Amino acid sequence: MMDLVLPGRGENTVIAAIVLYDLPPHIHKERCRAHFHSIAPGFLDVPGLIRKQFIRAADGGFAGGSHL
Image (tube, rainbow, N blue to C red):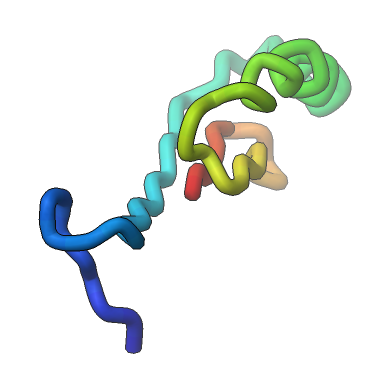
């Protein structure tokens, strides 16, 4: 079990977020992958971002990302 450290109560605050959004049917796997590759460099310099992972449902119904 992880301890939650609230803002203002320590320097080791970590927040995990999962963002999901519906994909239109015409956004196929390779188009989604190309989009992820095109925007990935923009996350390299985000202050405090430890890790970002892109997500796409196997059936193509939604996509998003997890952020730590």
